[in-house]
Length: 119
Image (cartoon, rainbow, N blue to C red; front, side, top):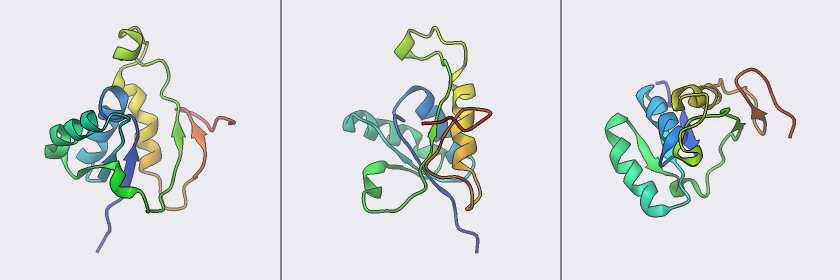
């Protein structure tokens, strides 16, 4: 029996993060959604649960997980009044790539679409 991959997406109650959660859930992954605002996080989980297995991230407090950071580029979101040069889906691509790495993939790194970025 093949086990499902699990992803944690932070800042996921809107914009790029929400697009990442949606895409990963649609790919059959179990996704934990992180949000600085608890109420907005719960609302996003409720909205996205029809996409697949989406949970609120606080459930992972004592779990060891692989952690990588992604630089999505200049994405058009409400944060920049939608003046970015990339769509949320384009910005989500690197996070989706990192979340779907094989077991021996990198951890503790910072990445953009093409390379590892020095901390």
